[in-house]
Length: 414
Image 1 (cartoon, rainbow, N blue to C red):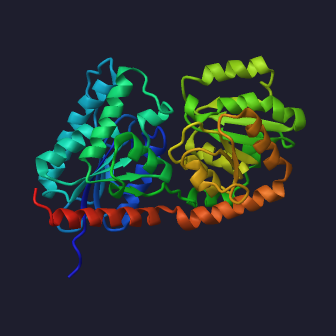
Image 2: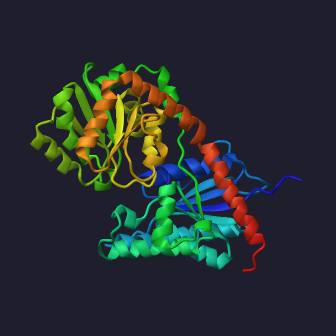
Image 3: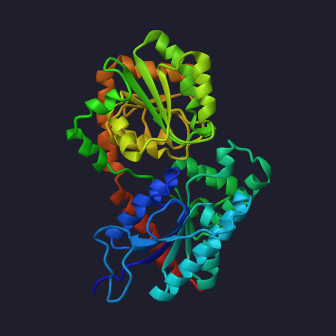
């Protein structure tokens, strides 16, 4: 007799097309991979940047029995009356998430477990856990204290930190995306070691593989001259991503290699400040603070770049480094957080000292001066991500945790 598929309610603040950072990319790839593995998973998320109110998780998603609901994503409208407080807005939106989830409980007949991603859905997740006595699994993608590099700033920061602690306390088990985050969750929230599992992020190489057969000469010409080497960075324009250090390092690199073009892409409140600094340094012809670029253009830039650099000050994992590796682009990363677990120095990339302009300049020059060796590192990195960081493998590891929780719940009185 075939094994009954697990029924999983997944709650996430981000889901494509609403992707702010690694969380949205993670859930947007993991949920369909779980559906392909046979998990009856339903994602409930706020409808913050469009998308259909409901849709199948993947093209081949099917109901597991007659009149059942196939694996799907449900986008819930946020409250009409927004408050002047993000934390309070999150709480109000969680009420709507909880209502949609309750509708699914009634229609499906219950879930085997709830999988919550980060504190932003903790309120709905814990309420449903208690109401239905359904075990809760929490994935912690980052922490407020970590973003503050060990400090909490202001009342909201303390409230978020408290909610993160509460979510890890309520959870049956906790997943982190790196050993670095494992240690952070253990230290900040006193989570028992035997309650934490490490499951990395993944990457799909297919969009980048498809570009191998595409002539990108004209696209590249939009960004740099034929004789210029491209150094590319993409990410949220916030202090913790460290892209401002690229601006500071640019004059040092250009003094030795004048034919370099720096492209820094992403959205954030620091864009204008960085553009002003570029002018102050007199490198406006060589440093392009590009702002937002579409996902297809980001993928093409990773394919045409001579190096991708991610000098983060805090990085729980660094999924964008995996994307660069999937594009066979030589990577340079700061030796922090999850980045140093993904990139092995001089084997799959180059690592540099964090928050160090001199080390950053060295890493770029070291990579650009020896393109043959850089390509060798990129080839090894591509083989590694193809083998170890594909989403079907990540889904298998996640499913093993689901099955463990369900077995333990079956033996537990509640």
